Image 1 (spheres, helix red, strand yellow):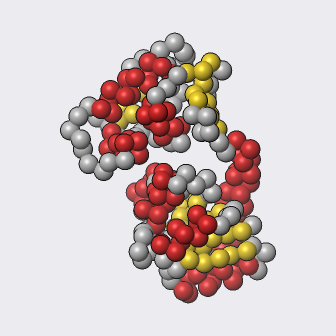
Image 2: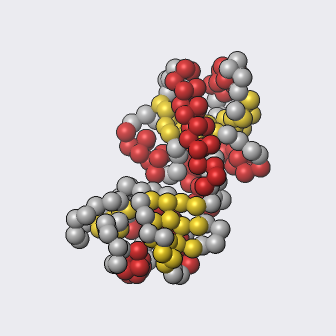
Image 3: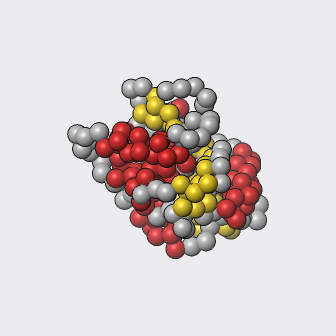
Length: 230
């Protein structure tokens, strides 16, 4: 396995590099977020190990940029001293595939890396397609299907559906949707998200069962299998 380690503490980076290389991993190290971004986009990696408290670009922002702005599919494991549940949730919401708090045992890290690698290899052939239940989207042709039937979506509707399908089962707030789909980080003061959710729901849910796109009152929206009516 070819590992990119993005870690600014030389002692931690040295320990990890030595321990992983003894297990026949190949490890390259970036000591700040800016270099980590360049190396992540410029190389072929099996897994990226990412610290959070990095200089230049922190781990949260780096993970989000790699996923949402550059569409990087490489598995990301966040390795951080920030071990509260809220930190784990934030890391996963920003696009990480796994989260391990410091201090940790090297054996556990290796086991998690292997699991991520196996999972990644399993979906490699489907990298340009996302599916959830009977929904499927093709990221190359920008086409959407439900129960095998093609659904005509606008570009914005497609991006909205793609965001939900990359985060199934997660409640997404209007602000998070605005940031990901409209690429603005402030409240526009309009109901544009609700309007587009309604457009999308009519196309992917109206004539199909079970319903997949649901409102969580006061919190946002979620893509999940649920037979309950809104």
